[in-house]
Image (tube, rainbow, N blue to C red):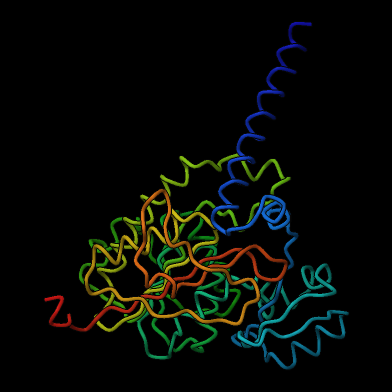
Length: 334
């Protein structure tokens, strides 16, 4: 009887803790997105749909489309993302098909394409993907540039790096691989600089969470958000030091937390006078205004140029900021 009582008590304590976390997340979402409670609940319970990107490094996209249709796939193209489509019917068939196993088709949520498209990679450029595993965005960069960019992909975990290497080889990607702690990049790269840098930062992943799914709250907490925000600020400063004057850095997360989004952008703007924001403009229906202030702290007004997305079925919650590094400081900043 005592053991049963203790088990029931532990279960109740766990349930109470999860309910407390849900309440905090719900309240934060209301404030972040400026919606009433019922609106926030609807958004946080949104079922997400997968999308597909066709990989020209492995197969001709036009031929792949024909094969997909013959398999029973149905979907529409994204007007803002070449070779990218919705999956309205046929995800199960695609997931287990040779087209996906061979790398001709890559299953991704549409939000993952946004930072790469904002980066606008070009052949001949030196490009760094700071936190690259599992490699989806790196493979997109390689596809856009037809493997004609000097692409470096980095991660700080040996097992993740090994899996990413195998993944990118399957996808036909040519890249250099580095195993560096992102908080020490400047020292590790020994003065090397890049034309463009993608920092898809480690984050709390709220864009992947659902309100009713208990496992999503295992590591989520406001304290964890604050720890991640501190890490993100360290990494973005390191990445900025590796960017050539005139170069582009794109910072992105799949979370809604202002501490990890607008606050990190504001931090770099304050710490580096040669950092300026450029507008991120995509025709996504779930775009919402950026957070102008949080916890009684006002952010730089130019942060309105960043892209903030609310949860939606087709494009999950996401955040993208695009920085340009001034080649020289204007006189008023010298």
